[in-house]
Image 1 (cartoon, rainbow, N blue to C red):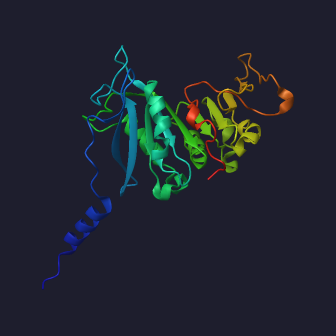
Image 2 (image 1 turned 30 degrees about the vertical axis):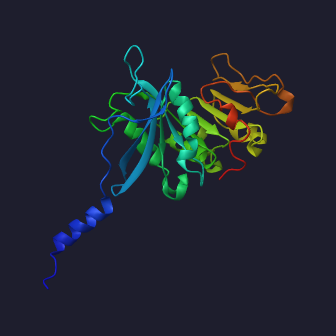
Image 3 (image 1 turned 180 degrees about the vertical axis):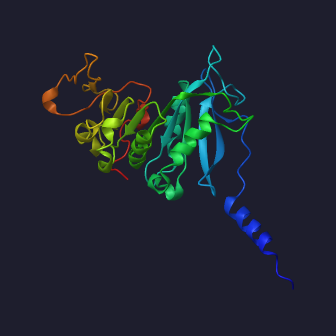
Length: 279
């Protein structure tokens, strides 16, 4: 039997390594109906030449899964949400759905072995999907390229801080997490707003003031208490030169706990715990 030509073998190897991405969706699957419908779509983006990265995207939609734009027709703000270690992205759909109902486009990139540190730049590839989506896809013209934030839970927060330091994001949120101590020297160069948020039962809520305060202003540090309990104060710091300073109603406590009611507030059903340890 005559052996196959070398060129054919190389072509077959290249196709096997590269794979074929899924077609870019033009509409999504409806997750929530009612006054603020939310839909979900799965994209695959090319990464590192040979890899395909699954990115779940949740977005405000109509009742048929088509993107819903604001009254002016302008693009929407977006968030890249990085999952924690050994926690699949699907476990964060409740949070992504809540944010999408408020008018955000939320992208959840996957990582090998569900470990964000195994492919740190997957968050950047998710951002590129939002800013330069496939032609004709539902994301085309949907996201404002300068209004994309990044957030991460636990180990995903460590990775999110690294990505924020690389640039390209408008804000950073750490959920029961803190920056890698190895990045401490780079943190003063972080020129975007940041938020450190934890649940009251997270062990990290006791650690929030120390690692969180190494983030430059403007920043906010806080921990959420379960509903029905008296909220504790939030610590905020504004940039120097704008009349801002660190403000605390109970500075002597040396804690940054708060009942956070912003767009990243945790729904009551998950207020008890966001993660008992950094993974």
